[in-house]
Length: 469
Image 1 (spheres, rainbow, N blue to C red):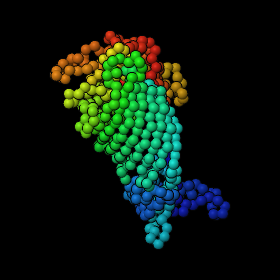
Image 2: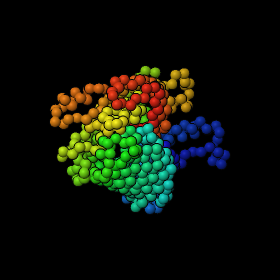
Image 3: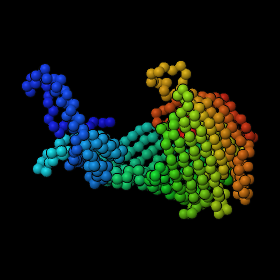
Image 4: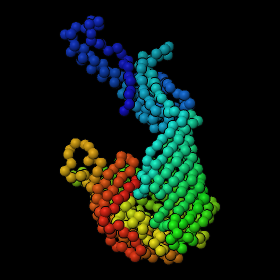
């Protein structure tokens, strides 16, 4: 909770020879203390002043929104509770290293008998900070170096430079972050970046140079992100053996896209939840603001988690999406959906389901995937909390399909095509949760419904990532 220091409004009796207290009166004195404490807690008080000590470059008006609620407290308990809540909000701003609270009686000519002063003692972050960490993506890892200028202009602004070197992707970028005063969750971000990625399942390499702007804001129970992205994409072949279909996609393109994402997330954990639900709906419109790419893309993710018997958890998830070409232009290999691998339909190779040419997977314009999971604690573990709490046994059933659609046909024909040639798998394994960063899976898989051209992983399969089906 942090430290909340409170000095009493009345002088409490104290024990000691110098205070003239008779040891025989100790029980009486304890009773008086309890009575005074009860009176103190229920006594009406007025917060007269709120002080913030330790400010350097931070503007006081920016913090007023976070601490103003303390003035509404009407007794000492409320003062302490609201002061702690204000302290948490100040820390959430990401501009302070430490925040302590001191509650004292008011002093001075305007002091009221029941007046209180609340002081927040803050320690600002340094003007320049550096970081080094590792990240886990969808079956890939990366090393990340970062330099940050927190609270650059005094109202929560942040300038960040980040370099990432990974097994399949290398990137660097510069971003500027600006929150709205009094509403940190409503913020604006401007990004400049360059990303170079390798996609061996498609014999493809891609270099993106772009700029993007994001506006994040909550609305009722939902979180929304509005984004514009302009990117210069350079596609090339990763190997000389790349198929003609991939070579055809090589070259330079410009993409300008507007996107919107809505998220409702009530899960207690994003990595290995025990309860709650997730709904994510994304739309992307490319070509309306210029560029070579022109399409409308829809993507949906749903996940439900419910506690079951003996500490186990039942989980169900469903993914789905479509991409509609606009203006008579075909979709790019870089914009299509991909399916398969240890983070989606287990038992199949990484993104190795669906349309392919000479062993290179080209992605699809429509897909769906679903999963049922049972997570249980390790058997024979002790009742004491320890390393075993990071592990879970895992039983799963996955299914899905990825294909291209003829948009001259109706919705019934589209659904019929998505229902054909369903790939599915089942199996069991062990999961290791790496804090709130990522999770590792080691499963024994039985792929079923395998179609010609699919690449399978029959037996042991390892997966690492954040987002799992």
